[in-house]
Image 1 (cartoon, rainbow, N blue to C red):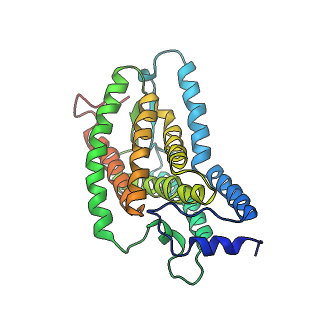
Image 2: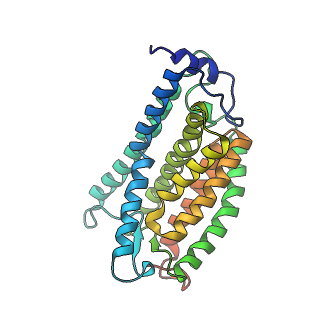
Length: 282
């Protein structure tokens, strides 16, 4: 056991995510957690943020406006081979969840013997399903509608790419895969960019405002491939989600809200594309 790791357990035990997690008193423990945090982000949403920045740079420097380009979210990997395509879709969904399993493993090293370790530290469990789903639905209703209006306005202003939520072939597994993709997105983002990142930044001595800015800017940046509208919309969403996490001490409602938003976007697009005139289809 590395020197100072016992401080992680003693300071984490008994705390709740709704308050700022106490700073680790041991300098070596903070250095280890700092490197751990950078590695987790490099394997997940930090890498996504860098990829989105590169993608946005390419879109800006390409001839024509942003609105004339498309950002495809769920596309086919083998259009003419549905079973192979399904295998690729499920492979992508499951492997994207590996960083969440890594976070769960790392968090189990904190409160030994308390029965409250792992992702339960972040409020990602089944202890309060009614609370999580109920508040998640309310948050999704508020953010989803305003987010759609922001997207349509940004695209009309030429500040956003045309977002194509799905371009999968019409096969029997299309809608289930879209739902699984939405759930995967919500779990990865809210567990890592809200629950895990805020906990680690608190332990490293960041101020609550600094942690809020880091989490929100990271969320906005890995959505930058959609354009300026995607950046701004997710920046606002990030601020709201951090505030709600601090208030509730649970990422459960945020995972539910994000999943509801993405399910409506993915499945709604699949059902409405080319059937309504107000929905851009790329």
